[in-house]
Picture 1 (cartoon, one colour):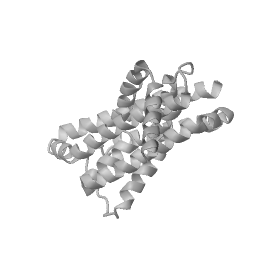
Picture 2 (tube, helix red, strand yellow):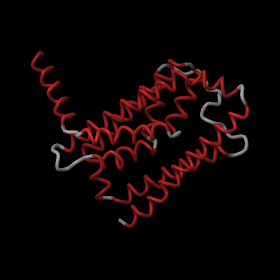
Picture 3 (cartoon, one colour):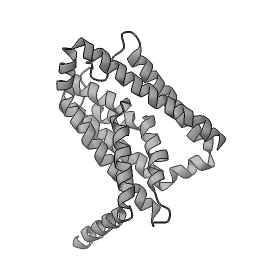
Picture 4 (tube, helix red, strand yellow):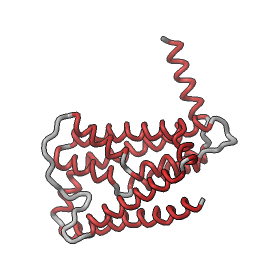
Length: 231
């Protein structure tokens, strides 16, 4: 048993040794910007935390974390190769992500739209449903796909050793950062929602900022779709 523990520790050290400080320092702020940009995960987590309590929000966050691990594993074990061989799948994924983010932006900005921190009713759920919803929401989240298939590979140095180990290490940095930020949002969601609800002007501006950020991300991704189709 002791030998197994030592072996696992050695594997962990080798995995993180494969990543340079510059790569780690590059992925951390990039991942932070992605997680702070309102999207499906944040909307789902905040809505559940406000309507069903912090425990439900944290359970849903656990599902979100598992979704990140699934993406990381698939990306590092060859999913990227599939998109190289069948490029239209990747183009289709990016196009679907653009449409989804544009739809979320429209839902937020339209008259009567709902912002991230506005309460909305959710029926009581079994303990397993928040976890499943967090997992499914993240697996269908275009931001997660972009993170693992487009962003993280940019920080992998093919000349620095095991690229798979680098991919897992960089993905681990992203997951830890995302879980910390989202857990903070879950714990503070109720207080933020109450603060904003008592200030109608803040509510309107929060909705405008959220919708504009979603729309901006959709535009940025939309610009990349024709480039991907030509390459």
